[in-house]
Length: 291
Length: 301
Image 1 (tube, rainbow over the protein chains, first blue to last red):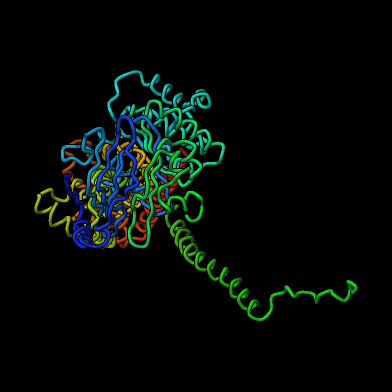
Image 2 (image 1 turned 180 degrees about the vertical axis):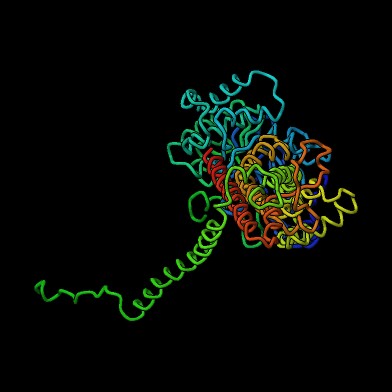
């Protein structure tokens, strides 16, 4: 086990010192963490994260399989969004964050000293909770990633194929010059997915991609997730347990209790998780008794 | 039990007592606030009309294109207008890139710490410093220390310094209005910070930056105090030359010209000053209108 410390500000370091030896640090990782079959995309171990002095993740460890859909579920404030943002170093952008522990992607250390977060984010795409198309044309939205990454190929083809893979092409092919903001919420979210796909990433992280969408748009995105999982590794944060049950192969349940914030309670194949949860708290949550 | 027995007493919905008093105060406040707005407007209109009565007789095409003269009826504001355009253009070229650069650094790159807070606070303070102080600074640094003399370049540098804090503040404001989700979206696609700033933050902030710039330029356009201190000429009978050597020519601007006429004893020159003020006001109002149009145009896209 290697221990690394990345501290962006003195506050972060002080926080780490202050919290050392307190109950959170003594927390034992959950035993109900399954080891996925097949190839592993992300391997996370002993992951702790602080926002300033507030600990948001405690001893999280799990392996995320390649070319499968992995869902992170749990009530608000359980750290699932924080966890997913660790996977492409989006948390780096928040001042005062301290991250400790290991996150590897296909055996490469994501937080290694020689790793450039820009390269990480190019390979590991992300779709956000609220659709955030750029205030530019549909075409420019999709082409942006390729342009900034120095893509040398046929941009028109790339835009078309990306929009097709995101199941949006038929709806927008006649007005690619239209502003991305003129689309409906569900279309905007698919545009954001197309934008991520245009970078030809290996992984797509989705942080509650459907929470701002109506049920029909949600269904389209869910179908898309299943389809994309044949080529991409997908990690999705969701509030919606039915969604996790519908789309994911593996599910991780996270929880914040009185003492410990952001802990992983249980991680298992989705079917097992929803039929025979090992932990009582998982059962309570998925049966709707809290959260 | 019949229906008539259970009919409740009619509800009184008219304002009485406290409600009536609160409503009376609310209605009165509308007129008081209207009065506050009108007071400023009325003063402006009265001044404008008074000035127009004095100035319009002196205002004609010859007035715009003639050089100053000792004879009031022959005097014009040509060097003032040309000097003003020259100096303002140079001021914009010097100040805006610096101001926008500083604003980008403060909003996008600077670590959020006590030093940044201090810098921000002091820039806000600088925006409130009287222009004559900038004039004295310009005199000491640009005119004397850098030996530029009372030249166009020294004038533009002084004015650039003067509008810098205000422009930085409006640019910071405009940049902070760009939603963080746009930055996240860009960074998540593997764009660098600079690519994010260049492709998304700056275009998003442009309406605000342009508005701030034009308002600052309008302020510089009317400036006299700072220019008097650095020694801008009041009487120049030649056009400023459009060359690098011309940067070191002495110059005058329209407000300087007006100021020098107000010092004359002859009433004819007062008419000239009033006419100059009309031209200046039209220019400044034009700039402000341009700011509005530009902002609306860019917002719509």
